[in-house]
Length: 291
Image (tube, rainbow, N blue to C red; front, top):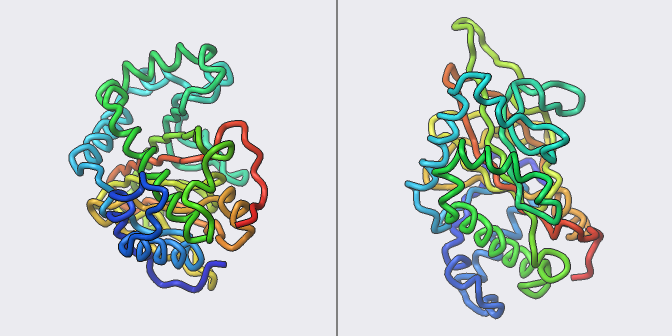
């Protein structure tokens, strides 16, 4: 269960990144320390910053820059990749089209997902997405690095729960699904305005693990502690914000709790973040596990 934490911990996952391909990595002292910190963070905050992840800062910034440029396009241009049922709910969502608990969010976004068995139905939207985001989508390293980083963090969490490093793989997550969501949050439009509308309402993430690449100069993401206080996830350059989701709560038998969070952009500047959601296999059954 989460606690009345006052700050979000920073975890250097470097040893896990280096040793993470070895299923016997738990015997390494450096990995053991990372596992200990992951266990504490997942029990107490549900959120942590990840450093030592190995993703180049230049690539992290490039993806944010491309996201900014897309949202600066004319509305009609963005609508060329509009999200619809026919696209498998991939593509562009206009401002206030996303709903959280019945309330429209002050955000616009683009969703892309790992192709699944129904890929042929959605080829059109992927071709259009490719034209809009070619410099990101062609750089497969961004996806691969997030995929393998997420898997290594999940291996560390499996060890923290007392299981084998690959406990969450195989028929559970060996062929993991993922979603990447590029999100734009307008800044305050009126100079004298004190508070903006909710960019993303209070919620928990439904999946396993989320990695957030956020603008370095705007604090908008907030995490709620057990006392009901909102703790800012102030950007730390060179890190990702990582949080656990509802499916990991189930797999851990409730030992780890997904933490409520929200986004409010009270800056006059437009803010973007790129969220990578790491999930189990697309067709797996999620139920409590014996660890």
